Image 1 (cartoon, helix red, strand yellow):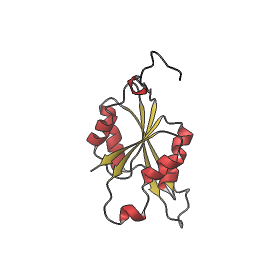
Image 2 (spheres, one colour):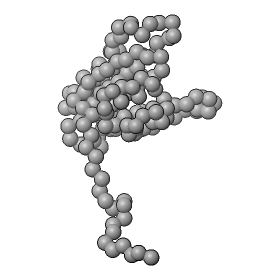
Image 3 (tube, rainbow, N blue to C red):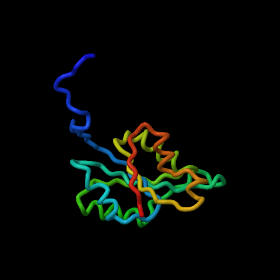
Length: 148
């Protein structure tokens, strides 16, 4: 048996991750306070990209021009007032999870931060969550925050 000396346990080694670009997909009106609380652990200059996907029916062409909803622009403005570097991207897609993964890979984000709702009843059994599908499909780190 080989004895190792002066080895520290893995958990005692501090890990520093420098995030430059964070993707925050938002599907509906989210309270700006929830976003600020979620981002309070991030240090340094981080570019936050608020990403909203408009799900298009199969009968509608994907070339339709889409605009950011008013509530999304309001969140972005309130975050900018708090000194955050915020960009808004709105995409159209047939599948929300696929659009998030595509943006994450093309944009080379350091982190995908997602809010997740607690689902009740049969809905959580019958459907897979968007955040779970994104985490499975991307090579980027995904952090989910449970939203009450």
